View 1: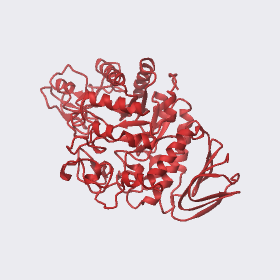
View 2 (view 1 turned 135 degrees about the horizontal axis):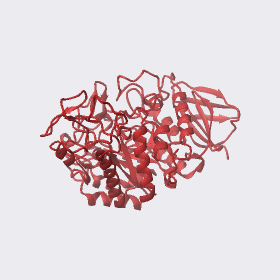
View 3 (view 1 turned 30 degrees about the vertical axis):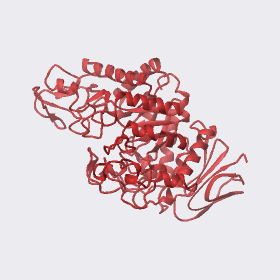
View 4 (view 1 turned 180 degrees about the vertical axis):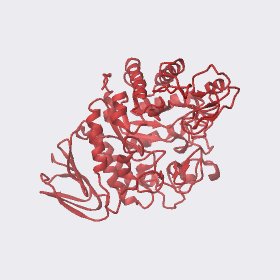
Length: 529
């Protein structure tokens, strides 16, 4: 691993909370969430105990891909508020001990960005990837006076920024090396963008499609070199800031310079199998290319924690103390935990695992109360990617209370960014705050346990006693954790288990030499007494 500056100490204690800004809280009654709404709800985050917030893109955009098509990296989108509003939010959060990370779209812009509008008229501009003649496969015809076509990164409206090609091809003369003028200008632009927002007070960035920069880069060596260069710059200019990657392959991305990477529904040699083997029950957001599998957190009891466990061990061995692996409950592109046949009673065991495993936990907004994936929603700002890959179901408005629009907005219901979950029994923050037996209170207690016990930090040891149903492990030599995600009860003899003080438990007992777990049971026990 390349020698980098030390990982900021605060990151090892981070409990992330991802906010999809347009769906979290609306302060001005236009039906779309905004900075003011987030500021108004900071007390919820502070009460919950999370200490690091990640905001999905909040920059100026035509919103053909929900803000991942950036038209100006230095200006916030008016629907969320002003630059001063964002600065105020960062300040208010900081006073509560909450750091804020922004989402950096590094590999492409909107086709409405001034850079692209200029490039589409200037054959001498190489900020984007242009084929000067014709329209090669995967390219999009030029919309300007410039002949030829450009390469998009995702949707056609997202032209790929030119970071060069790892390999030359005489049949494709438009391929430029990574040290050409255009790629150098784009690397400089990334530094300028990051520097601008870090000076405003944000704590770092989650980087969208971080593996997408250099093209025809089969081992990602060219892309890794760019992030290594940027990390060295960040260590010098902003040593307390962090970079998290949307890469899905920590054993590659963290040695390249990222402080952490997420296990995701895609990425790595197995295309996201570690995360999907935990949560994906083949409902909600599903890529038809995914191999069928039975996930571990499923009532049937046909899954196994081993695909995740094996991948985590490999990645942890490669990452070492140079960074971290993050484990999300879900995200804006993937099914919520509460999806399809999974019921509310199955969620506590999932959170017990997620908040006690030696990864950085990332809670997706609303998962702490068990909000469900809402099926069959219409396309909204590019949410539908395939016949079974509809991301809108995980982007519905936060459910705060029982009032109009569940407290999300005062706008008429037909003006909301997305419709609310129509289930009359949908969970709300207010109802669960009033019920100390609720999922919300459990998550709060688990967050407090994690942040208060060094044994549960990513640096704390883990000893797996049984990798099956139930999943049994010991953290830091102190905390015995038992989760049984299946509906059937199970008893398992485990060497070394002894009577211990119960920290959190439902349907699980730990006695000399064995654990017994009811269906969907969980337990955390303090072996120190």
